[in-house]
Length: 237
Image (cartoon, rainbow, N blue to C red; front, side, top):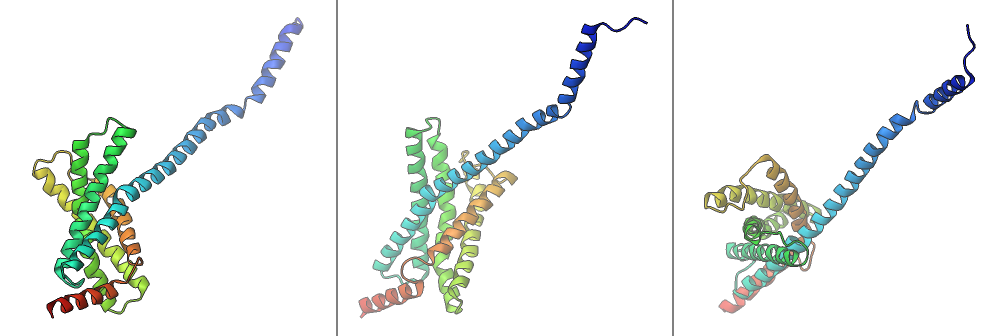
């Protein structure tokens, strides 16, 4: 047989070396974009959570606290003790007003400054839904604090009880008004489904935590109740 041509032998040797070098890298090259995509998604998810949390805090939690506190002062000046249903009604309306106005003002500023595609008619309906749910949690807050403190629970117990009760009240309000408002013709509010069930639960958990933290701010509720009752009795005298 004829000996192999030198050039052919060199080509075969180079091909074998190249195949040995590329035995592992193709798999690594295939995994690299996947890893990069997963890392990007993870970073995007974290940033998205921070952004949503910041938006909820600025547009809903802070305005709700301001509205509740303002309404409590109005109820106090009207002579309603913190142990009366009217006081709870006032503060529920204050929560509703704060969340409704806070959401719509925030979305209007966002539309003007960042995203012109925001539909304010839909956002007004969303603000109505959130404000209605906030009314439920705002109404429940003071009676729950009074009840838990009357049971001689420690501070942590009061905070935990208020968190659960107000978070649950907010969640029930969302689910109920998701049925009520669309039936009234408000098409900008999605009806109950599994996706908004999860979103409502997550938002309610955040609201519950905020209402629990509110227990530790300012004067204790028992002191406020005593002070308001004393003022009411003084006026009657």
